[in-house]
Image 1: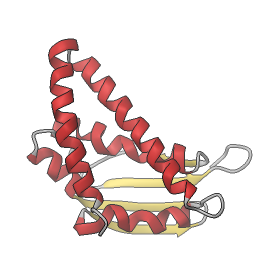
Image 2: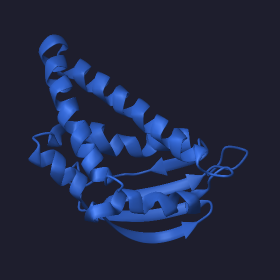
Image 3: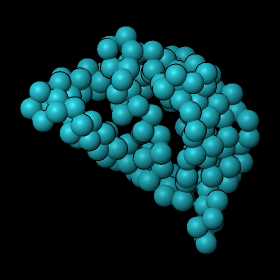
Image 4: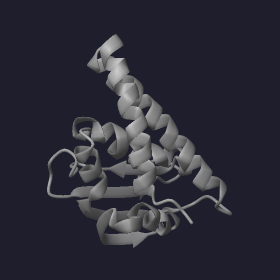
Length: 158
């Protein structure tokens, strides 16, 4: 049985909360956020690389879209897909239980470090030609998260 991603994130967050608290006490909040942010970024890149290794060829955005149910498992995300193509994937997240979980754990103020910032960093490991643009998140108080992924061409343009 596969552990739902939201449960993995809850477990990680419970450990990172303790680490974050010690870092704040010893080095201040700014350094704590920097360290936790970098650690989560490294984890997201590594996870992207693990998923990339399972693909028979360089993945495109349709391949990436096929992975979305892993993050949606147990109704963790409610997603409205706007456009899905090999070079483009646009969707809105209209409910984010990750945000809800972090707030319940008292981690809402660093939830962006624990979850939101992972999204773009995952691309680095999965396919560095993937680029995420997002202007708002539920975690930061918006009504929805606007995910806009593009696959850059050989000349680096989306």
